[in-house]
Length: 96
Image (cartoon, rainbow, N blue to C red; front, side, top):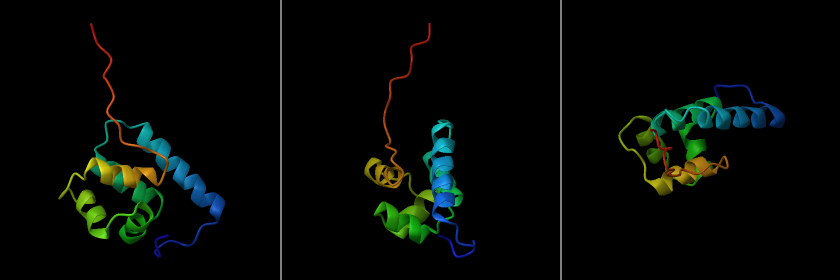
């Protein structure tokens, strides 16, 4: 947890994670960059902490956040996977 914040009890940390997931799921219009930023901020993580949890490099997290990289599908699945989410392609409903 980011040292700029006071440590939260486990139940509060879990509540933040649930809120972060719900926020991302309920905003499909957000870019991947915005999702990563939001998850990191909402869960009070540093780039280093998020990278360690996701199994990617700190530079990868920073590059995605700052728009220098869009991230690969594999990388995004690692980041989202730490919260039980998966990046997917879905068919748009047909409009008549």
